[in-house]
Amino acid sequence: MEQELIELLLASKKALSTGQSICAQANTYLQTSEGHVETIAKIHPKLLFVDNHILVQCKILEGVRDYVNVKTESCQNKIKDREAHLQTLTIELTQIFNHLKKCMVDKDILRVNREIQGPSEADETQQYTCLFDYISDQDIIDLQRQADDEIGEIETVSNVMQNQSKLISTFLADIARARKAALSVPLDEETVAYSSERIQIQEDEISNMAEILTSLTNHYDQLGEATRLYQSDPDGRNQLDITVLEDDHEHIPNILEDLRHSLDIVESVSQEIQDRTQVYLHVRDELIKILNQLEYFGIGGQADGILEKMQDAEVEIKEREYNLDEFFKQLAYLAQWYRCYASSYNYLLLEIERRRKSEERQEVLRREIVEKIEDAYNDELQERRSWSAQHGQYLPEVLCTFINDAPSILRVEVERDSTRLPELSPENVQKALAEIHNSSHE
Image (spheres, helix red, strand yellow):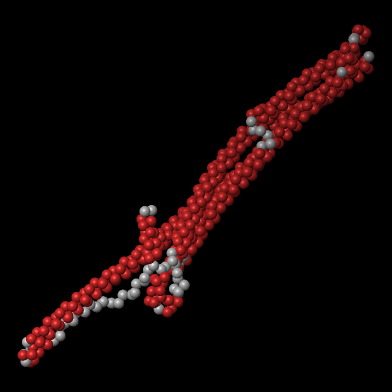
């Protein structure tokens, strides 16, 4: 029996040593896990701060983008308004020009003009038949082109502004993707508590292992006491019962297996917590990278360039708008001028007709005056002849030499020869009257 006790004692000692080693490893894993959990607890608020700062910076950039979008939309609306205004003026001028092309100049006006003009000038205007032929639309074309160019420049500025918005959107999308990829673990309190909960599993397992180790220690102590009694009391050896100790010894492999199983659990949890710590550290590094990207984008970076371009764009848009307003004023003035030109032609026809009638009245008056002058002259001449016949033959001629002078002759002369006025067609005169009447009632 002594040999059996010694063997049991040695086996128990070995089992106890193995159990102690296993428990020591478990405690080491627990300490490591506690360190990781402490690291996570320290990192977590920092991660929250950095992530919140990232969100704030993104919100600011979104505000900048919204500002750019508002300005871009305003610019696009201005372009639409200016294009519509230019189109309205263009349509108006086109209608006026078409009207001028339809306004045929009275044929007799053309004939009189050719009679007055020199050969070179007559050749130049030989093909003139309508009011449009007497004007040049080159100024209109130049103004329209310049206005269209200004609108094109504003569109270029609008595209630049739109590109700035796209640049910010692309950057924000990249940041959002990077943040999503970085946050491989949620930053809520439940996630942080998860590691502490896992440590509780380790502590429970180690507590159970400690109880098992205590039982191994007790078993070893009991075997030692039994061996001591056996060796010190030869008379009581026959009364020593080691059946329970033998039974306990048979459970040692299972007990050690339970310890190893618990150690596996503790190790697995420790590895899990370590992996989670690495995840948190990785999240920290990635969030710091994102924050650096935001700071680089904002401080002296692309954001400053975007704002500078926006300021330049606003200044340029104002200049282009001022130029456009000036061009539109000139186009509107020319449109009004050509309307007056068409209207004045109608009044020209009426003026020609009025002057022609005035000349006719003057001619009638001239003839009446000439007739009266001739009648007065003939009467005076007859009176003088009668006097001479009655008295002149008795008077010496030298007595009054002037008495035989002829009466004064009065003449009616036109101060200068007027250009022959055209003989306007009645249809053209009536048309002019109708158009003047219609325009006065519009």
